Length: 104
Image (cartoon, rainbow, N blue to C red; front, side, top):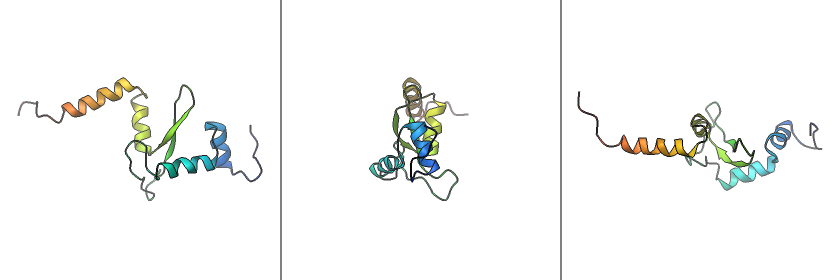
């Protein structure tokens, strides 16, 4: 580690060092996802800052899970990558669709 393979760009080296994948493997992932976020299924807007897919990985194992847009990646990060919290958020959103608050 810490060296460039012949013909390897610096970004590709960073992918290999941080996630254990090559630039071509990342491209295969993006192609398999049709350039869409694995969660919201939207293509990031290339005109906006950070308008690209980022590599999502399990912070405990380091295993790459897929490619996400910045918003979804930050969202699951803020929810601590915790399924219980994510399911609770889903239940909250579903509950909030009903009109249960008293009128003011």
